[in-house]
Amino acid sequence: LCVEVCPAKDKSQVGRKAINMAAQPPIREQEVCNWNFFLNLPEIDRTALVPNSIKNSQLLQPLFEFSGACAGCGETPYVKLVSQLFGDRSIIANATGCSSIYGGNLPTTPWATNRDGRGPAWSNSLFEDNAEFGLGMRLTLDKQNEYARELVQQFGAELGSDLVNGLLHADQSDDGGIAAQRARVTTLKECLHNVDSPQARDLLSLADTLVKKSVWIIGGDGWAYDIGYGGVDHVIASGRNVNILVLDTEVYSNTGGQASKATPRAAVAKFAADGKATPRKDLGLIAMAYGTVYVARVAMGYSDVQTLNAIREAEAYNGPSLVIAYSHCIAHGINMRKGLDQQKLAVQAGLWPLYRFNPDRLSEGKNPLQLDSKAPSIPIAQYAYNETRYKMLVQSDEQRAAHLLALAQQDVQRQWQHYHQLVDLYEAEVQAQVTAAAAASSNGSPKEQA
Image (cartoon, rainbow, N blue to C red):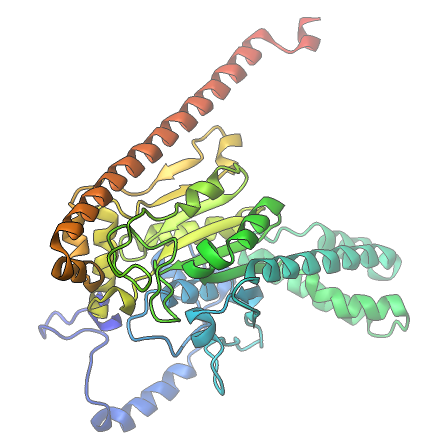
C-alpha cells in the first residue's frame, strides 16, 4: 500500500519511487547501514512546527510503528497519525478487536516512546466496556489534576507567584504551550525536592497531571455500533473531554467478518450470507443530535487534509468528540494495494459522505456542519463491484443483488439530501442569530436607552 500511494517518483527512471518493492537478501546489508543512519538523525522540534498540513504532520515522529496488522490495513494510518500529533501526551483505551491485537502483541509492541521517554500510555480492557474504561481514565486524570492544582496553591509561598500562576493558567493549546508547562513542572519538582511532607510527596507524584493529557478511546465498528454502543452513548452524553476514534471496517474484522450495524445494505458478510437487507446505522448523526459533541466522518483515501483537520479539531474541542474513519479491510475482498482508491470511490458514490460538525462554530456565528465531500457523482455499482462482498451475491442470487443495490442507491440519495437539509437548517439558525444580534445592537442596551 505504501509503495502504491508513494508520491515521490524518480523522473529519470520510470516506475521507481522513494519506496520500492525488492527482494530483501541482496540489499539487507546495505539497508542495515541506512537504517542505523536514519535512526541517528535528530527529530524535528515539535515546538517549531505547526502540524496544520500533511507535510508538517508527517515530519513529526510516529509513536506507533511496525505493527503486526494485515498488509495494507486501512486502520493503522489513522492510529499512526494520532500518535504523531498527540502521542507524547496521550492516554489510550483500546477496545478488543484488530486494533488491540496488532496494538498489544508481545514480545514487541508498536506503541513507542520518543527520546525523552514519553509516549502513549495504552491499555486494553474488554470488548464491551471500552468507552466506560476510557471515561474512567478521563475522570481519574481530572480528579488528579484538581488535587494537584489545590496543592500548588498550598505551596504558593515556597514556589513563588510567577510559577504558581504559570502552572495554574498555562495555555496548552499547542506544542509550544505544552513544552513550556513541562518546563514549569520540572521547576516545580526541583522546588519540592527538599520539602518533606505528605502534601509535598502527593504533589510530586501528581505533578505531571498538570500537563494537558489527550485521552483517546479507540475501537472498531463492532464495538462502537454494536456491543459497546451503550457505553459510547453514555460517554458522549457525559460532556467530558474525551476523543473517540472508530476504525470502521463495516464488519467484525477480528473475528472473521461478521455483519455489524455498520455493514452497508447489499454487502455479504457472515450472518448476512444473502446480503444485508437493511441500511447501516448512522452513528455520526445520532451523536450529532446531542448538539454538544464534535463529530467527523473521514476517509484518508479521499482527503488526507480533511482527515488531519478533523482529528486536530476533535482533540482541540473541549468536550466529547467522535471521529468515524473509513477503514478498508481484507474482509471486503479487495486488492489491499488499492484500498485508498476504494475509499475514494466510496465517497464519490455517496456511501461515505465526509463532514465535520463542530458545536463551537455556532457560537462564532458560523455553520457548525461542514460537508467536506461533493454530492454523489458515480453509481454505487462502480464502487461495490470491485469488492467480493458485493460480487458474491450476484453469483448466488443475481435478482436479489440487483434489488438490494437499488435500495442502497436510494439510501445514498436520501442520506445526502438529509445532510444537505441539515446544513440549510443550521445556516438558517446562524442567520437568525446574526439578525437578532444586529437588531439588539441597533436598538441599544436597556442601560443605553435609559
